[in-house]
Image (tube, rainbow, N blue to C red):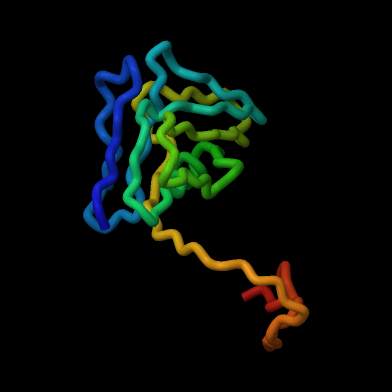
Length: 149
């Protein structure tokens, strides 16, 4: 697929490069860059947390930022724009929006794994305006129209 190039932001001298935790992992772990100390979240708090890296993606790809299941299910963190998209032509610092649903204060520390990044292919299509769309069995049914299971 190609190389994903990471450039450290000023002051990031110690965080490891984003990596896959296992050979079969779909996403790379992204860590919190908090050189000034932890951020303690209260219920309902939203913070934009730096990863300490800028990125250069292969042509024709995007980086999707997704929640880490442990942080989400065990502690109540979500990424409100999940999956977040980092476009291939973006060269700024990758930051992660974290929203806290937990009840008790919870600290995110420098180096904590806060999200995962999945590199995905992007397909560009031509847009065309038409008078009619093709028929399908489902039709216009949405938001649960196909049943519970």
